[in-house]
Length: 251
Image 1 (cartoon, one colour):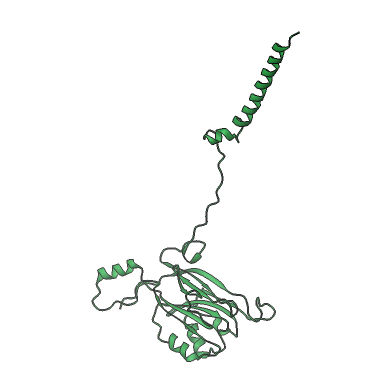
Image 2 (cartoon, rainbow, N blue to C red):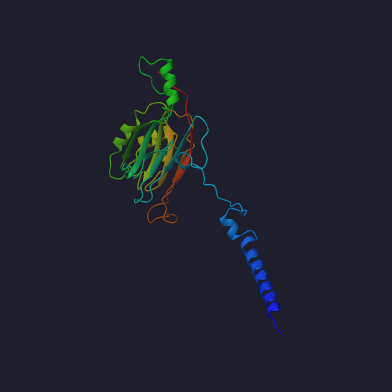
C-alpha cells in the first residue's frame, strides 16, 4: 500500500500551519517586526518629559515687566566663594575671580535713567530707556572684615547715588571689623539684620540708596556651634527674586 498521497497531504498541512504561525508572529500584533521595518505598524506615542524652561539667573519663573531678576548666594565656610547674578549676568563669582574674604559687594543702576548729560534730548532718552540701561553694573569690590580696614568700606558706601542697587554677600567672616557707622549705612540701604551681624554669620542682602522702607531681600544665618552645617560656619544662604525698577530720575 502506497502512502505517498497521505504523506504529501500531512506535509502540506504542516507547512500551512507553520506558515500561519510564522505569519502571525511576524505580521500580527502591535509589535510586528516586519511591518515595523516597512513603517506599517502603528507606534504607541511615547511621553517625552519636557525640559524645564530656564529663566534669568535660574529663577523658577520669569519676573514681571519692569522688574530685575537676581540670585545671590553667600560663601560656604571659607572654601566656596559667593555668587551674585543680575539679569542673567554673573557679577561676582569664583569663576570671574573677583571674590574675597569678608563682604562682597556689587553696585548696579536701579533706575531707568539716573543721569542725562547736557545735550540729551527726548529722542535720546527714549533710546536709552529702550536699551535697558537699568541694571547696568556700576562696580564690584570686596572688603576684608577680618584683617582689613573698615574705612575702605565707608568710603565706598558714603557717596552712593540715589537709586543705586547694593548687592551684599558674605564669605567667611563679614562682621568682625564692622563699626557703628558701617552698620548704620547698611541700615539706610534697607537692612535690618546688619545690627546683629556677628562673627562668621552668613548674610545676603539687596538694598538701595534712598529706599523708603526696609528691604524685603535679606537673609541671615547665625554662626552657632549647635546648628552649624560646617565646622565653624553656618550653611550657605541662597536668595533670589525680582526687584522693581524705580521711576526715572532725570537731572
